[in-house]
Image (tube, rainbow, N blue to C red; front, top):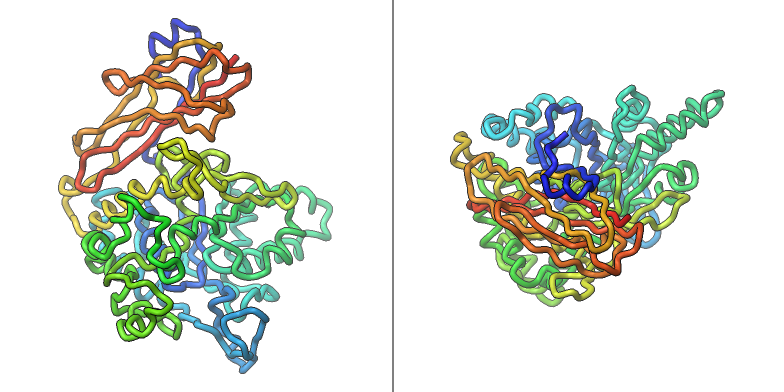
Length: 505
């Protein structure tokens, strides 16, 4: 229990708080599995993702198929579905193989792992990551008729004794996840304890989907596992989508657009043996087997100006799957158990209770007070990209003191405060930085996280503190969410947070 500030104790307020901090061990980290069809934007997302495996307990990296990528069965079977990129039956489609993760990505990770380990000893070894790469259901789009190495692996995780939530990331189709669930159903549905088993699995698993890239969610998971929570982050693709699909990406716009320029990407991300694998415009790279991965090709670009706005070399290309792991990153805001709270992944709302489906909220109020479509995820562009760049620097730097590391900001009260309307509350902060950087703090109201519908004035005090008064018109039961934000002054400014919720009594 932290020491309560004297002003709060004097008021007799009940207080509590959580803060950003490193996890004490891997067993306390969010437990997760990545399933991927390994399109080039998946590759870019994987490059980012592995830099966060020091704070995520990665249990598996599993190849899957999708409507855009599938391997074929190797027996000459042709496959066709309406409304696809192809208009005649195909033996396979844009398949990039099942060795890129092992032979290219993790080989480069192995080169930089000694440096990463300097900055955080919780980074998994290359061999640990290699041991959890599996091949799932890849033959055709939506194929879930047979057990595979990948589906068996997920099935066993769902049935094991680890009581942590298992976050199943769907970067491609959900068919490997669906097959794992179907295998559990086939094995246990005729037993007397099936209802309890099904309920336990439904509580344990959460699917984080960047979209539904086959029909297995609609056809199998939703009707057969309606209590299993599924979060659809596809609307955030508006930010991270292919620039070609979105013109010049004006949704990024404003001062944050610098983080998507060729100059920024080339200088800060595409460097070294690991970062050079990250994909960008006209970078002369291409995913093997994917005839439609033409974005690194200058001649294609020159012939496609009628459909694609001009973009400079090395500009941001696409990274469609960080949307599903951003919500579980350790920033001090994250609470994966409560999607209604904001995080780097955005704030969600329940779309339906049966099936238990969540989607991102449509809009939030920006700094001008205007409703801003997509602001729930675009508001984090600068901290997200600076964090990525700082970690990429870790891959190159064997000296801890020559790189930047995130500060710790902590509300010295606790996670919740209760007070009557008109009560003045003093909030104290504990701020530390491992590099002895200067940390600039600010306190702000996350309006949409609370039920009180209007803005609340916050006065910032010395020593990173703040004072707020519960409005006189606040009603009993109203909540007000206050966020402490701290940003250091490193080369890539790093930001962490803490949150306190005020409840009117």
